[in-house]
Image (cartoon, rainbow, N blue to C red; front, side, top):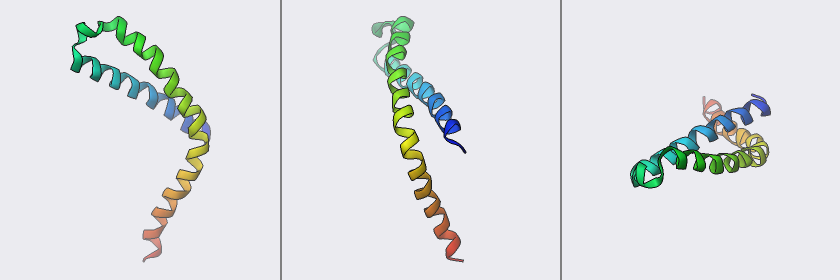
Length: 81
């Protein structure tokens, strides 16, 4: 996988996670009391760009190192045989 694919998957993940978190919190606290759809959209407009910044800034630096680490764990089992 190349970095562009990883970032795109991360951005889609950010959207889905933001939507799930906002919806869950608003349902638990009372949808109407929280402001309904207008508040939901407002929260999404704030949370999604910030989560995208994390993906765009942190992911490109983190993914290569994390991939190497996870590959080393996967190769440990292969070396035992």
